[in-house]
Image (tube, helix red, strand yellow):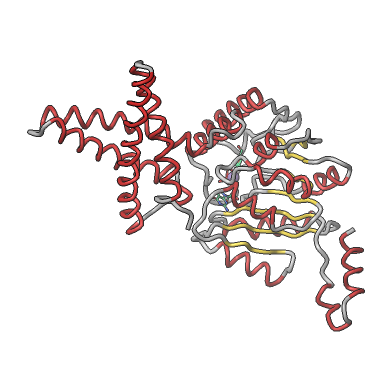
Length: 384
Ligand code: GDD
Ligand code: MN
């Protein structure tokens, strides 16, 4: 199909340029997100090359500036095989964002996403493409449909988080797919492209996000496979994946009204309240300071805590360090001080109209949180 279209383009070009378009656009783009996979990526390439001999494919590696030389391995592959391309992202992190960018850079009929660590069975790719050509919108490599298994590839706790998450997602989001957490799937590019603007680029559950963000019912096919153990290196997904996942569930269950980041920011704020009260009590007990002074110091402690934790978790994709960390902290103090004024203003306004202390207090706190969140997201952790 791609060949015919390219032949037509080539026919219309001046003879001197025809050889330059002898390569046609692929039928299948294989997007491979990588973070330190130098030891695996060549093996994956070889495996794909061996099993997709009669498919017109290309491989798009989306690397988040790995420090182990993954990019040079991929560039070397690309120098010998023009079907390989490397998209190196600098200053950005995150599996979902990487996958979305890879998909967006494709012009093929179909796009597959596969991990670099050889946990996914590349022999499924051909069948996935065939399913899409036969009319499916998405073909998913499933570990939970009869014939598939995950037992070899996961540690005990990851297995139970994964099972628990799958059930929760199926219930809450009414997803009928047996393995909505799979990182291995293929989708018709036109279908992906229509859903992508609504996807969150945070987190790691791209497939689940695609499934629940689609406006039309999708024609989904699941293909069983055995999730293999990782070849080299370690999993890049840590315990924060559970948090990410929770955020995505809340976002989608609230029809995107509550963003995962805001949720995280709010939760961190709650822990900050604990820090504030603990610091206040300690200062009043052990330090010779007035209540007002103790309150100011406790507020500073809580703000420093909130900033640090948000910088580690909530904004880990834009994490500040060095001088940036210091300036970030200063702007965070400034914004939160204004937020505190907004908080008190709203609370006393509500209390004036409706003297219910907890309602007024909660309204003020919510106002402060929304203010702090929206301003710090563009001032303290602005996108570079
Ligand atoms: N570009 C980029 N940026 N790639 C990343 C990042 C990132 O921040 N984090 C991880 N990757 C790459 C890894 O290099 C690997 O190729 C792939 O994404 C999957 O990462 P792993 O670290 O191997 O994940 P896992 O094996 O723990 O989890 C797998 O199974 C989950 C099933 O519950 C993945 O397939 C998940 O997507 C899947 O949800
Ligand atoms: Mn893996």
